Image (cartoon, rainbow, N blue to C red):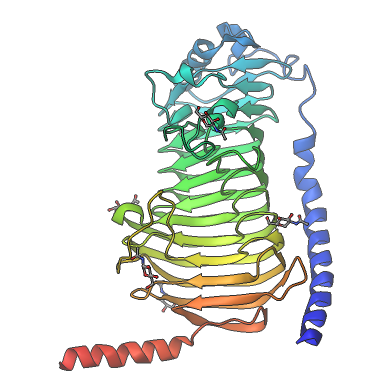
Length: 443
Ligand SMILES: *[C@@H]1O[C@H](CO)[C@@H](O)[C@H](O)[C@H]1NC(C)=O
Ligand SMILES: *[C@@H]1O[C@H](CO)[C@@H](O)[C@H](O)[C@H]1NC(C)=O
Ligand SMILES: *[C@@H]1O[C@H](CO)[C@@H](O)[C@H](O)[C@H]1NC(C)=O
Ligand SMILES: *[C@@H]1O[C@H](CO)[C@@H](O)[C@H](O)[C@H]1NC(C)=O
Ligand SMILES: *[C@@H]1O[C@H](CO)[C@@H](O)[C@H](O)[C@H]1NC(C)=O
């Protein structure tokens, strides 16, 4: 065993080094644009055609003190009713204070919002009095929108976190805003931006179609509560790539009725890793299928790649692949949990569950902060089926042994899998089921 461990560890080292190297070199170019913010003044020398709107021309102060919300609304109204392509410029070197704002479509035009400067939220949660506590920058029904520009969006979430019941259990539990919400969006391109310190989730896509997100940096402290990086819900055709996410909750979470999701070249951590779910909360029906997570580096995260479902829910999590993932000191690197429970009271045992089927983990290497590097805790009544492990090497970051945990987990593995897989063979499950079904049918 010692021999196996030392050999697999040295193989891992080589593979990890190679992987890290190719990952980083291939990403150097990708992140270049993050480092090169537009030159100061470059936007000002552009001729002020009707196709370029400067928020300053709508009365924005850009001093970070005066309220610039109306100026943004006005610029949006003009841009949205224009025909053709139009750009709204938020220039570099200025800070714009924006209160909760609804930015509504559909528009006649194809709008680009160029954020080269900084947008900040009010620091004081009381600014939301009488307004929805879930929203700050809220885009609704917008199509053909591009947001870019190398600037920063800062949710100033510190006071929200201090008041959270997760920070101090004597506080009442309330909602907190998602910094940027896209609701009912279509053909969206979000790139080259820094999104910081959201009150709660950073960026959320709900009921969206055809979205490409790239070259983002999403950053909040590890201890900030519920600050998911990118949240995808009820959406189809979403691609997230070449991004760095360091937050207090999931780097990326994919939930309720989402499909055709592609996640590629992500650096994640600290945070809770990349999650499908939670699904099936409060006995809901939900389906997530056709998800590919390819090339990710996760460091010091609470989970690696995860599927979590609540007891009592129903629906499916199927056709999901995680591949080419490098883990550095990750707790629970590979985990499927059909007993997920995040409520203050313990969750009652229930028979219904979201079916988890055809999930592949391929070429996943690195170090685990916990002994159980692979954990499949599946439902007795809806076992996990079609799980597949290939080329897995998860050693302990503290030099202990690692192991797998399986409960009602059916599937197969190929190539080297360390810790050794503990899956039950799918055939025997199917046979048992056939026998059981015929017993039921004949009785
Ligand atoms: C939690 O909040 C209560 C009431 O505001 C306060 O008295 C207490 O010191 C806080 N605890 C911590 C750990 O911050
Ligand atoms: C998912 O879609 C189904 C069918 O359209 C709907 O009944 C269900 O409420 C949706 N679930 C969630 C969590 O949005
Ligand atoms: C590894 O992760 C554990 C648990 O999160 C943490 O306590 C420990 O300090 C980490 N080790 C390193 C070397 O970062
Ligand atoms: C649920 O079932 C498990 C395993 O059978 C048992 O240990 C646990 O106490 C049960 N929980 C509740 C809330 O009934
Ligand atoms: C799982 O994969 C098997 C074999 O490819 C396929 O027959 C089955 O339909 C898949 N299940 C789902 C729910 O997609």
